[in-house]
Image (cartoon, rainbow, N blue to C red):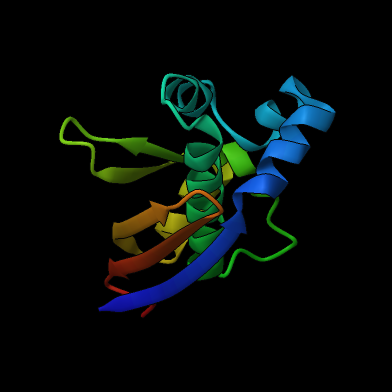
Length: 129
């Protein structure tokens, strides 16, 4: 059963400008150390950061994260498995919300080009009873 779906698109230049302006403060507010390290290891690191940003936003939308539940950006972590396929790991409040919504699986897809990154998240599970 589909619990939720979300999509987001991000301009790579906006992520680059934010990193240029706020540096590590911006990066650590949005991304986990593993996400930062992975992106930094890639040839076009800003495209990867933008893709992860879009994936997080797509997950927020799919979860319907309420403002009263303080889910922080790094609590939704976008990693890659051994084959390079993106995967989402939830931490702390995001994990509690995932469990509350009875989400069992997250299907995430993302893509990026020179100028844009896009991501789609589909949450599958048993739903509320």
